[in-house]
Length: 326
Image (cartoon, rainbow, N blue to C red; front, side):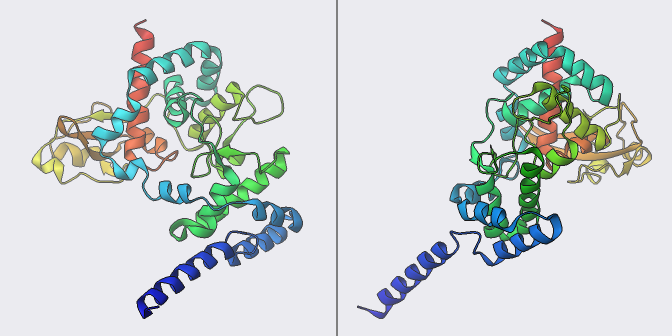
């Protein structure tokens, strides 16, 4: 056997052994620390947490998907095609018509337009059709222990998953969701589920899988708690000047004043809170420039992507327009 072949076989063997060693997350170095933390900080039973992590499986598909989300792969012209379709718009109108009373109740209580709530559910799961199908325990364990770029965040969400299951008497092995560990019709991550979901149907449970009132109310509450401004704009397309191009930013958080925009020859139609974010999006017809208001930033608290927030905004407008004209 040649030295080169021996090295290759040794490397292959080491890779196989490493994978086998990490197949049981209860024995993973970070898994052991996680178990200890759940016992000390949250008073969970060590045997229960250990047994759950022992059953968790590493998912290569999860690691593949988390490394190339659509929000980072696509420009606006490609991203828009996914969500601004006749099928999704028509399904949104149907969802609104079928749940109008609940949506009006949520809009009244939280100040968030029914069209925005509908659009969120439409973008996230196509009104409940597509919920992910990944075991939440597998997805979050994989990301917590085998995805270094965001291991701290996902370890925290894994802890929140255990607490969510404990508080709501749920079988942690049966919970399914997205590859990033979000679940239910509105795709709440574990911490958001615990913090922002509401019992909107009065049955003393917060059910984001099957209770449409809880789903709708929870989305409304999420935006309300993140500072949604009732009656204010989300975003508006604007003409651009050479001076205005220097004000373009990537961040959706409003930081540019009306005075600075007007000095650059850009005039918002609605002043809102008086701060704006000038964004550039690559559309089919070329570059588009948008003034993002405070409520646009609030939408990005759901998903930290300008493309996502614009898809929600435009889908909400299309659904509202089509509903009105029918």
